[in-house]
Image (tube, helix red, strand yellow):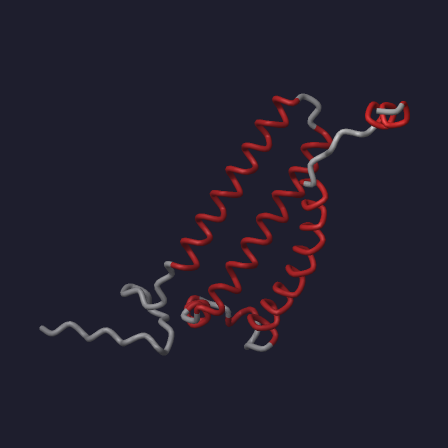
Length: 149
């Protein structure tokens, strides 16, 4: 090996992980996608309908009766939680000086994000639009029969 190759090998920067690059790219892309998802969500729920005061159980039940809107709302939840978690991860990296503190804060934030995703997914995908004990049922729910005496 010649001397130039030795110097290049010694002074070469170590290969770094691409994680931060992809995390940065994810923030930009998820922010743009979230903007579209949320604007459509607000338009459909408030502007195109009868206003915010008409968004009630029956409205949500009618919307979530469609797998399309379930998936749409879950995508908002998923991207918002991941976007926010990544942002908090960056703040922790900037301000938590000790590695152990960074580890535990990141663990706590990740656990909270996982809990929010599980709770949100269960709410969206197991939602019963026609529960028996609710008075303001959507129009597509069967009317319970009156008890006979």
